[in-house]
Image 1 (cartoon, each protein chain N blue to C red):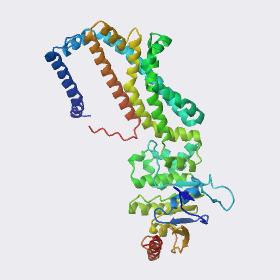
Image 2 (tube, each protein chain N blue to C red):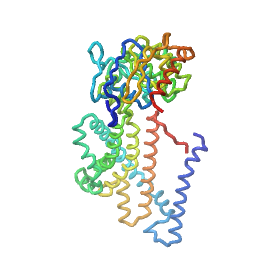
Image 3 (tube, rainbow over the protein chains, first blue to last red):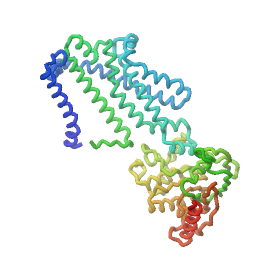
Image 4 (cartoon, rainbow over the protein chains, first blue to last red):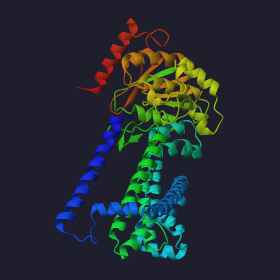
Length: 256
Length: 231
């Protein structure tokens, strides 16, 4: 990638961020908003630097929970989607449960999960898994069901074994759909972890935000929010690029 | 046999000779593909049967080649050719796949991905995959209709040469293709649909496209298709 393309690609988001910062600064400056309601960008920047050790430690905890949740949720959702495809009884019994994992708000479950799995990272990992389970399972299952019929006809004319059709035809054909689910999961998994931390934890960005909030350290709270947003964007971007590389046969049009 | 609630053909009686390249000709929408799918066992007829002379079922003895190449975009050319064995859980015969691809003129593209090939090359891979199955009966659903005329003519030559001696049923809407390849030409037309045997031009297949008898037969066929289609 040439320097010019990198500059072109970074130019727009950086421009947007600068614009937002300017707007923020303008509101604080001209609107006379007290700093404990909305701290000026400079104060948040100072908090970001002064509390860098604290923020880095908290971000590390949240990142660990998020990544573990992503791995476990992807593995579990992927295996379940395959089982649902392979067996009609599994499909009939598990589909309502998958839907339920989406229908029950995780935010309502959070206190219960903290009660069951403790203040450590386990309850947050479970939260992240619950949040991503539905997008992963349903996108992969949809992909598995929508194999182009021409391929299945061909497989039938070859007297293929059903298990191998699932493994060598339906599974690779479903990977682009699976990837879409995984991208959504990467974007929302941190949300699950942070909600868990908010309810009860001893470290993590959500925990930091909550304590800063109760102490009216609004600048630190904003700094933590900034770190969380940056982490989420980077995680999404990493997952997106890794998937594009792994699914080398899928057209990936990113001219801009 | 019905399709989409409309009866396509009733009381259709069709005998296809063994060891011969048969071409089933008909205009679009006449039900050629539906008929071929019934023969292949991919669809079940509302009434009627498909039977081979020896009484044994056709399943396991036929290979299928469709209008689209149906290559797996994630698999290399050689793996696409060996797809049948990979889906049956048998050990793929790599040497034979390489040999077939060599005959298709693709010896240097073994590890290419389908996206790196032209339409004609992709269809040659599909033909190699069909031949790899090594079945006595080969059913082909307009396999060359999406190709340009030069590539199509080359594919016809290649198919006639490599499928020689097998029982082939190829369906097409192209009278010239029928006249070049058919050792037996059957015209599907009318409402209700009837199948009629057509006089076959002399000469061994693949017949040259510029030969007098081929051109004449093509004209006759086109005239009959026009008449059957009505005003």
